[in-house]
Length: 192
Image 1 (cartoon, one colour):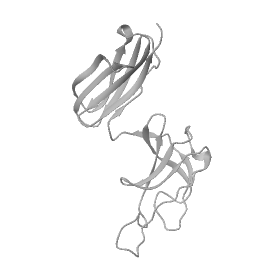
Image 2 (image 1 turned 120 degrees about the vertical axis):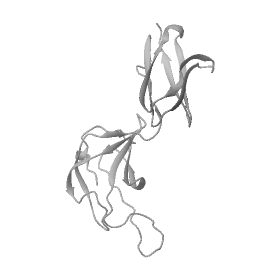
Image 3 (image 1 turned 45 degrees about the vertical axis):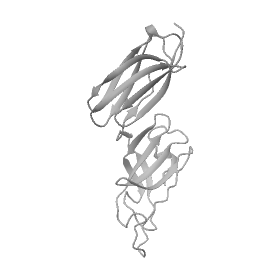
């Protein structure tokens, strides 16, 4: 159980809270603005197949922020009851969370900031491994306006500055293509 008073930061209704054992989700719920109860999936020891976690298995809590499209780890500062270990028919109640820590395990293209913009904007992106990155700006009709990045890039977080000097006011799209995926976001150049 996660009482409303446990959050040390603001969540948005619709953010998903997940409980994991390793990389396996063993329970989840959607934040609705108040208390949140999550049932964990335990293993039925009467079958040969593993359907969930076993008694005494540790777990971690994280949440997915729908606005930033990012996952954050949650460290529990205090427990009212129980702990971060699975117990059959047990109850764990969070007292207070510490500040969340962003988890990044895959490529990410962030929304440009500021948006809308008149003169310049910054696009941030993340690569978990070194790889080829191509970021291009397209107008609303799909015409290529500018190539902002086209190079092999080291793992980590990177920023590219976009200058609106050659862009008329209107809606544009920026697309990041990597060795593995393609991501697209919209941005707006306001009247100068």
